[in-house]
Image (tube, rainbow, N blue to C red; front, side):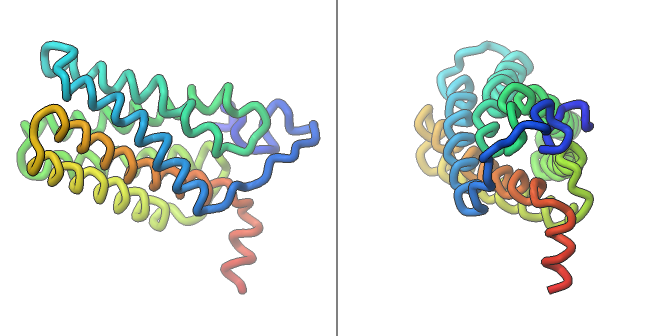
Amino acid sequence: MKCFGLTREDSPGAGQETNARSPGLSFSMLYGSVSFGAVSVLAYSIWAYRLVPGTAAMYATITAVYVGLSGLALSRLVLAPGAWKRFPLFFATVFIVYALCWCAFWFGLKGKFHADLFGAVAGLAVATWMLQRAFGQPDGFLRLFAVLLALHSAGYYLGGELYALVRGSSGRLLWGAAHGLGFGAGLGYVLFQCQIPPTLSANSKVR
């Protein structure tokens, strides 16, 4: 997936000098959480206020909001020069694959038998692999996937509990906020770790 030019070496501006530095793990997770959380609230508002009739159309519109905005929101965490132009397109692809996996389990199991969990596992596993490939990070798939799944699930199921308590439009928006905060924190973690040069990762293991 080097065609997306998300590594500093493969980006069109690789020969130019850049002052881009890693923002740090804590900032990456916090920024990812807040920015993706905002996108998630906007997406969930479609469900909260019944803005689109029909289940399939509603899910498609929610996905479109995530696809259109989340990559742009998270592009601040990508260090490659000019990545804000390319990362949104790549992340749109990632999110579409994640959404297709989730919907396949959700609709396939008719919302039963932990369909949302199985869909998340499948979708996040593929998303983790795609992010690793795009950034040229060969190591740590299980760790990255586990953290992303844990934070995504924490936000999603906490949101579900909040919705059960509050209900109505406010409850739906709270679910969207919690889901987005957890999912975004996980994505911030993955993006930070995927941009650590493999040589540095190897050296840190030796130490």
